[in-house]
Length: 384
Image (tube, rainbow, N blue to C red; front, top):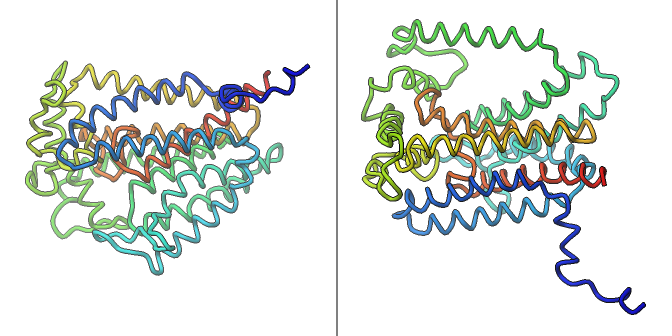
């Protein structure tokens, strides 16, 4: 009988917290984290403590993931509305009295300097998943209109800063929830076709649309310049086209097997701009080549497919929508970053998940992983 009252050891106390952790998802993240540490050691060797800081940021993201994974999905739903309202309020504060750096007003001082748009990467899918769960079983066209307005408000405020990269990520997260909630294909196809037509017109009339003095409606000048630079980076090879050209040179020079760890000449001779942040994929490609890129792409695909599987197996509509949206954020991060470095998408400030240096982005990734782990854990506990 005395054994009944024995104090549980550390392993026994930790067991409930670890129960239900998704092994395949954790494995995919582990592979990407290892690739990130190797690449950061090489590309950031002369950036002071950047390698150590990157490791610290990964540990912080892991701790956040572990803590958030302990929160049941239904508890996460209770944070949706206050987090969304706080995020939008802070975006308004940025527009009114925000801090401007490098021509962009994206930060606000609330005792500490923060970038509120990062909050919306998680708050947006939370809010829309909560909204559609409240309307479950009685969805009408008006509910999708309301969801669109809830999405348009923060996206518009973020674009005004301007911050095209973050606005794309927030828009992707929100549109993923709306799509997974059952938006009709009849409403999806027309804007997609219109977008393809616009892209075709831009490519066909690039000479006129990118001529000096021509101004595109809606877009800021720097956004127009990025699109025109994408279409023909050789027009300004030492200026606006330098990033894309050097990125493509680094990727191509890696060949099949790469130049080897710490042997990237484009990287170590500092031809690659932002080689530890937005353009770290170019540094990785130069040293690990096509084989390394295939490994990286497969790892990201495995992470995305596992995230979608968690969404498919989730026990509630809220969990399904949220897991699907979080997964699509990971996909968008990777697709946009690799695309812009490879010269097939305009250059925007989107990091490569677990590879690029950055504290705020790593915290967001940790939150997203924690939510996926929470949903996976909740499903397994229900089954048991």
